[in-house]
Image (tube, rainbow, N blue to C red; front, top):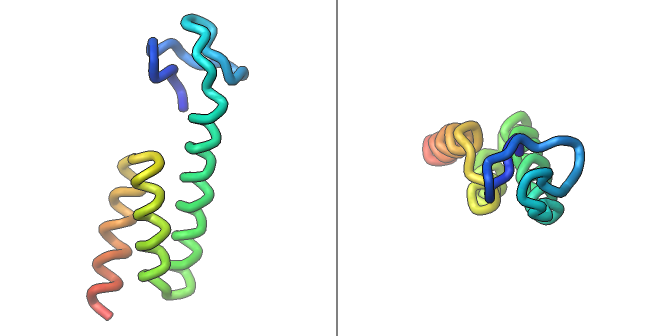
Length: 83
């Protein structure tokens, strides 16, 4: 996360927004969980398990929607359908 979702201020090294004071701990945890699931889905694809990758990416998109996860989901889903 580069900007505060509340006031759009650039974030520093702390888990509190310097401008509005919003606590960002939980949001940062969710973002990290989505990153871990994304990495796991790539590992699933590397070993040829697109169904498991699709399951993980469904969770990722529920936690933190981003273009990379969306594209990877489409790729994994297509691989799973073509099996």
